[in-house]
Image 1 (spheres, rainbow, N blue to C red):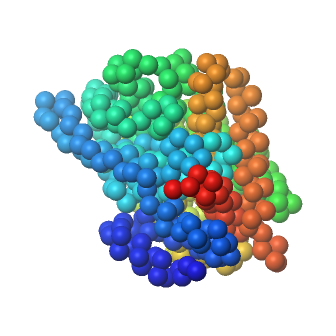
Image 2: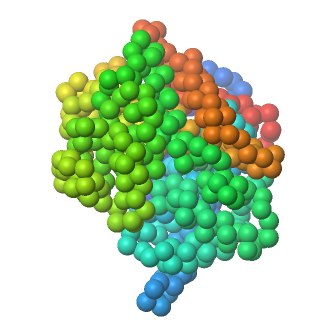
Image 3: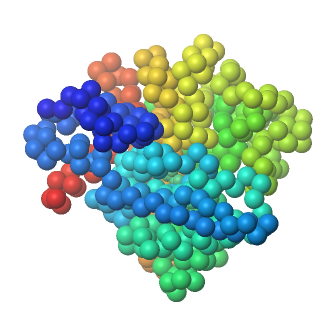
Length: 445
Ligand code: 2IT
C-alpha cells in the first residue's frame, strides 16, 4: 500500500531542488492513490515509482553567437519521460525560467495529457533557458541552429517528436526543422507545428485555444448552460490566448481581459475582432513581451503590474504560465462570483488555489485536459505526415472538437463524486493514468 506522505518524501529525496516536479506529481498522486491502492496489479508492479521516474533526461550545452560577435552559452534539455503508449511527444520551451524541474514537471504532465487525447503519444518535453526577449531574428536563427545540432541526436519521427511551447512558435520551429533537415537530409515530420507549406497541419496554430474553449463549452453544458453571453478573463497574449479569444467570440462569449508580464488590459468591448486578434500576433512576434500597446491601440484600460483575476467575470481562463493563479487570486475570483475556471496553461494554478476551487465546488478544468487540443492536433499532424497527405481545416477541426468532447466525457466518468460534482482534476488524472499504467503492465519491464 502506498502512503501519500512517505511516497512524496522519498520522491523529494530522489529529486532534490525540483519543486515544480514535486508539485505536479503530488497533484496526480492525490487523484490516483486510491485507484492504485485498490489494485494488486498496480501495487505488485511498483507502478508509482516507475511512472514518476523519467526514462532518460538529456542536458546539453548550446553555444551560439550574438549580433555583437560574442559567444553565448545556454542550457538545453530534453526529458523523455514515458513512451508506453507511443513515441515521446511534447513541446520545447525557450524561457529564462526553464530548469530541470520545470522540464520534468512539463514532461510528467504531458504523459497523462497525451494519454487523454486518445492518440498514441508518450510524454516528453524540452527546451532551454534562452531568453528571446529583445533578440534579433538572426540571433534566434543562430540559437535554433545550435540547439538542434545537439537535439537531433536524441529525436526521430518514430522515437521523439518535439513541438513548440512558450518562446517557440512557427518561426523557431522553421529554423529548428531547417537545421534538422540540413543535418539528416530527411523530411519525416520530426517536429510538429510546422509551416503549412512544409508539412504542417491546418488548425495547429489555433488548436490549443480552440480546444480549451471547446472544453469550456462542454463544462458549461454539463451545468445546463451555454457560453453565450459569458464574460471571460484570459491571461497571456500569445498563441493560446489568441486562439481562445477567437473561439470564445465565435461561441458568443466575450473575452474582456488579456495580460502580459507588464500587467493586464481590460477591454470592455471585448477582444472580439479580427483586427484585435491580428494585433495580438503582431505584439507577440515583436519579442518585447509587453501587452500595454494593445490598450493604447484600442482605447482599452491598462493595469500595470496587475493580474486579471481581480476582475468580475463568469469564467477565468489562465493561458500563460505555471502557478500564475495563486490562492489570493482564487479567493478574489470566488468573492466576485466566478462560475467556472478553465486552466489552460500547464499547471497554471497553485495547488492551494485548485483545492479552493474544488472545495467551493466550482467546476475547474485542469490544464492537462483543457489544453490537450494543442498536442492532439500535433498528433493529427503526425498522422498526416505518415500518410503523406493533408486534411482540410474542417476535418482537423471536427476531429479536435470530437477529441475535446471525449476528454470531457472521460473526466465525467472518472471524476463525478457521489453528490454529482464533477471533479475534473480527479477525472483527468485517473483516466490519463490508467491507460499509461495498464500499458506499462502489458509491456513488462
Ligand atoms: O504543452 C503542450 O502540450 C505543448 N506545448 C504542445 C505539445 C505538442 O507536442 O504539440
